[in-house]
Image 1 (spheres, rainbow, N blue to C red):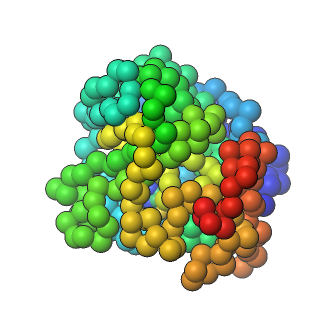
Image 2 (image 1 turned 90 degrees about the vertical axis):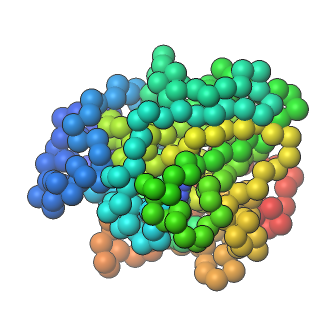
Length: 310
Ligand SMILES: Nc1nc2c(c(=O)[nH]1)N[C@H]1C(S)=C(S)[C@@H](COP(=O)(O)O)O[C@H]1N2
Ligand SMILES: [Mo]
């Protein structure tokens, strides 16, 4: 289980600006300038968000942890590379090409995607396939609401996503570390599930660049790599789309990649996880089936062999 709050923090405690500022002031002691650089949102307007019933009673990691321990290979493979290099990324203007089997295909400006949308504060567990975890207070909206607006056609069985390809600003893309652009995909019922969000912020501020500004996917019951960052393309398709880590190592990273403590990665156990921010001597904690979201999502996989469909 993720750290339960000793002081009974809930989403109501992290959403208000005062609390957020308190966190920032605490973090400020550890380097306010570095934070502003990495976060990129230090002077931007606070987003208006409403609490969500999906947040539960989780204690979020600090913004410093969330923006300085990242996987974003477009900026390098070290956990600190995104904090060092992502500030160069231009995130405005930004548009998303929405196409494939939809009624209203087109290139949508980010403002049009978010206009009139209510942002919710979703405090989610986040479990990387590398067996570390965090709790992140995302601000976002259901992917389903966007998909419904563009009208997904019945023939569409999957949704495919792509990250920006811009080697001039993303130094990792100058090597062929991964087959760029980074690609991910969901089955249509997973994409439409209310827990699946497009996030545009964290802690009430615009999405920090190391976390996938300006807009990224968050699928909390799956390993972190499914939650693709800095999205520029969303396509409704009939067949299961190719996805980056599955292309790289199909025996290690399946298309589904649901968090599952009973199915080990070929090279390490998935039974437990290390909580980032827990300190050097914090014991590992058990990993939960579907990352603790089984009540909401287990039915999506009824009758499927989760060892085969890992
Ligand atoms: N475009 C892109 N998206 C990505 C990645 C990446 O390298 N590139 N890394 C993934 C992995 S492995 C993880 S664990 C999460 C990390 O999200 P965070 O840095 O916001 O915690 O982003 C995922 N999305
Ligand atoms: Mo990951």
